[in-house]
Length: 333
Length: 239
Image 1 (spheres, rainbow over the protein chains, first blue to last red):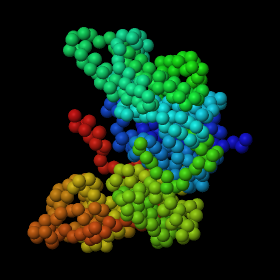
Image 2: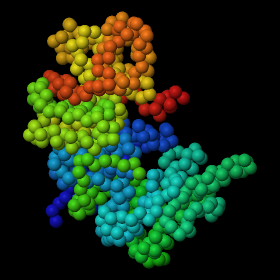
Image 3: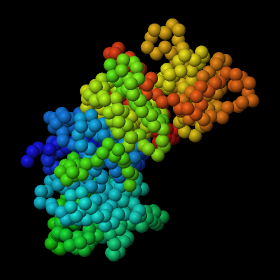
Image 4: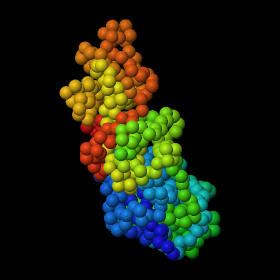
C-alpha cells in the first residue's frame, strides 16, 4: 500500500494540537499544547482566551509536528481538521489555518467531527476493531452513545440531556475546592475510599432509551455535602469521591452494555477524556466480558483531545472519498 | 511585485491583489449571513482565476491585524499565516486604522478613522498629514494613539484640537452628533458616513512597501492587535 500521510488539526476547545499520522494507524508526531494552566485560574475554559492562545501557538505546534515527523508540509496527502462541535472561536482558528494550507498546497481538506475523532483514536491502537460497534464517548463536553455502522456512518443512540459526565466531575471538584479538571482529582481520592459508603442516585440508568442525565446526581452530591456541613459532620472526601465516581461509572457501563446487547454488536470502543478513568475502563471490560463483549480503549494519552485521532479519522474518510470543499464551516453543537 | 491584501476586521470581507503598487483585482462582500470563514478561500480562488493568476504568483501577503472584530481578525490572520507558511512567502501585519487613514490622506485637516467596537464604543486614532515626513513611508503622523471609547468621549477629544476633523470608517451610521452645537457642526465632518471603506488596497500597499524595504513581520510572533483584553481577564484584574 502506498504511504498516506495526514496532517491532523485539533483546536476545538483548550488544546492546540497538530499531528502527522501514517496510514490511519501510525502516529509520527502528535504535539499537544494544553492551555489548562491558564483556564484553571478561571475554574473553566474561557472561550476568548482559548481562541487567542490557539492563534499564538498554532504555527509553533505545526512546525514542531512537522519537524518531529521529519517531513515537510508538501509530503502530506490531506489536511484533516475538527470543524465541530466545540467553541466557535477556537474551531475557526484551526479551520482557517487548515483551509489556507490545503489551498496553498492543493491538498484535500477533510472536516472531522470531534466526537468522530475520539472514536477513531481506537483505530490507532487496535487493528481488530471492526464495524459495526458501539462507541461511548465521554468527556467534559460530551456523553454520547453511538452505533458505528461503517466508516463515517454513525447512528447517535443518545446524548446527555444536561451536564456531560466530565462536566459533573469538574463541577463537584470545583464545589469541593479541589481544582480543575475534576476527573483525575476525584479518581485519585476515590482509590482510597469506599464506593458503597453513600448511595447516590443513578438518574435514567434503567430508562428504556440511551439518553443520559447527570445534573440530578450533581445536585444530590452537592446537597449531601451541604447537609453534612450543616450537621457539623466532617466529610470523608475519599468515600464521597469513590461513591460519586461509582454512580457515574455505573450509569455509563449499564447503558453501554445495554446498547451493545440491543443492537447485537460484539465490540465496544471507549473514547474521550473520561475514558482515561481506570475505574470506568476496568468495570466496562469486566461487565462486558460477562456478556461476551469485547471492549477497546485508546491509550490514556489519546483519550484527551489530540490531533492524532483527527489524523486517523481523516485517513479513513479520505480513503472513502469523504472530502470537503473550501467553504467548510464550523458548528458548535 | 504581486501582493495580496486581506481585511477581515469588520463584517466586510475585502481582498485586493496589487502589482507594483497598482490594483489588479479586488473582492468585497458585505453580507452578515455569509461568514468570512466560509468565503475567504473561495473568494481568493475566484479572484485569482478571473485575473489568470496562480497562487504561486503571490509574492507576499499583507493582512489587517486590527483593531476590529476579534473573530474576524483571527480568521484573516490565520488564513494569511497558513498561506505564507505553506508558500514560504513574507507576511506583513497592518494596523486597520492606519490603512483606513491612508485612504483619505489628502484631506486638509485631522484624519479620524473609526471602527465600531460594541454598544456605543469605537476604536479610533487621530492622524495629521506630516509635511516633514512626506517622503517617509506613512505620510501621516499619529497624534492620538489607538484607543477604544464611547463616541461622547471621542467627540470631546476631537473638539479639543480646534481643527477640522475628517471622520470615516466602519459603523459610523450609528453615531449621533449634536447638530445644534455649532462648534461640532463646523469642525467634525463625516467623509463617508455609512459607506464603510474596505481596507485591502491600502493594506496591500503598506505591506508591499515593508516587504520591499526588507521589513516583513515574523510569522511566529505576529498577533492580532486586540486593543482590549478579554472580558474574563478584565474581570479578574478588577477583583
